Image (cartoon, rainbow, N blue to C red):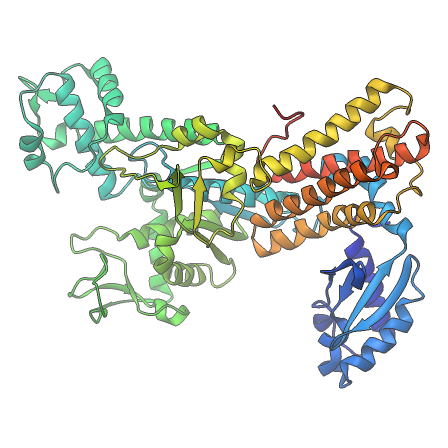
Length: 595
């Protein structure tokens, strides 16, 4: 039997449809779905086949549904079929079919739910990609968690995934960072300059004032002494120190970023340097391809309405015909000083990913980059001849609350809440799970008090408590010794006919949904669905646990009913396995017991 019951019965539905409507095109059949019903009273699954195929078949949906009911009633494992609404067909499975989920889970272990729906397609998921201008703060956290969980989800669904961090180490912000480090370096040498005096010498003024640069400056003094300064710890000409300090600072900041990401459980496969992409000529080559295709021209853009964006200048400049690919206006590729715009460099970055084998690119960005989506998608369409799709996942801002009040942060002033602060306070797992409890494009509040509270309203606790309860039951059974071995292998062959109560069947239905959830969430690029599913699974399990308090026949361990006990132990073990499988996608460690 197929591991995914929904895929198995979708095949049965398609077979029935082909028998009834042999002329319906395969591309139409590809849209037929078999999904869980919202209410168990309506069956275990439903199909939209009759509604979807009515137009192509030139028949009423209700008539097709009636024929489908007759055909599906003959399918093995189907207990009941009924037409519903405007053309849906509800299917109720025989109890033994739902029970068959347990051995499937126990034999597969945490691999249960894995599929080959991704067909090995090479997907590059780029996330975080923070400017290496300081430690990671909570503003980076949501994108890091969403990107990492999405990459894990895609891998479980059978995609060949590369996790990437793009290092923005070639722009004006990194130069400003180098000047800020140089100021700390001069301070370490004992300069008599005031901050105001040095800021007046700095292009654009001193921008990064955080104390996190002091250790970098101390390391510079240890390596270079006073060689990068004039006598008396006075500033030397920029050309004598800028490249050295820029490279030194970026290396230190990147090492700190990697440490912070590791503390969050994020380990990316590739770190790509923007500066290296430029040095390798990838950006120039990409721009050359656009020029060869006739997609570049010299022109003057109309002033945009409202506030002028940073990349608009009233002058003739090199423009990309992005409007030909769905953008609102054409976009500049060169600044007034002749250097590339950020957009031009980003085109090269994405062309580089394609050259390295990416067949699909997914970028996880902060919502403040939403206005950048159209131009980037336009550029990727142009530079890849529309062969490699770019998908953007936007993450809205996270408001950190303590005692019901927002926690402020400011990166340049150095008074922000760092990612490490957050992890140290509530733990990696609470951070990761909580960041996935809302859809990424919805704003969220991260309540520092709630995420560590042991209460029903805290989904982190509620799911972990379900797993801990499962493990407690299994430990008790093993310590008792009268129920036989409680390994997954042994329980996979346990008789299961004793599982028939409504709460037990509800839990079986939920376990059956896991493979389908993985596929649908991966295709929708929505990792938060895993957190929602686990919350529902935990609710089903806790509900069964609580019913056992009132009804002794539903308790997991029953000395007078060893066969029923083993069936329930199989259910408990399978529930724990699926919780671990889901938590693994989220990058969260399951707990064995609550303290």
